[in-house]
Length: 137
Image 1 (cartoon, rainbow, N blue to C red):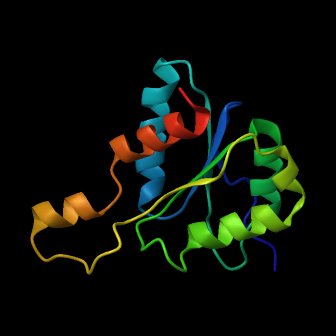
Image 2: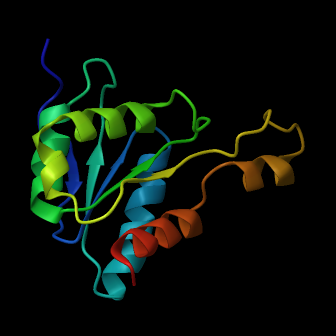
């Protein structure tokens, strides 16, 4: 089984941002903000997580030399953790100029109150911060 073709939402040269589901729009918004600052993000929308489109991720990382993953789940055992493992075990590892950064939900039980829920899930500002941290700017 092959994943759907063309997972690239935005093409860029500075950093690869891999995400899926709800956080695609957050990453696109963050990429638009960062573009105004001269940072080009290549945003990959994982349309499926099984099969995982490792080939597209590796190709992008080999081009940008940086990787940020974004997901709403907990940091342990998530999609971002699997992407990190695959990149570390594959040919793209030698192209990385900095460690992979993961943007995830906070490692706590999901709160009921809306304001607390908003603070426990990744926000656009968190993605921007992580991209800048990864690029050391």
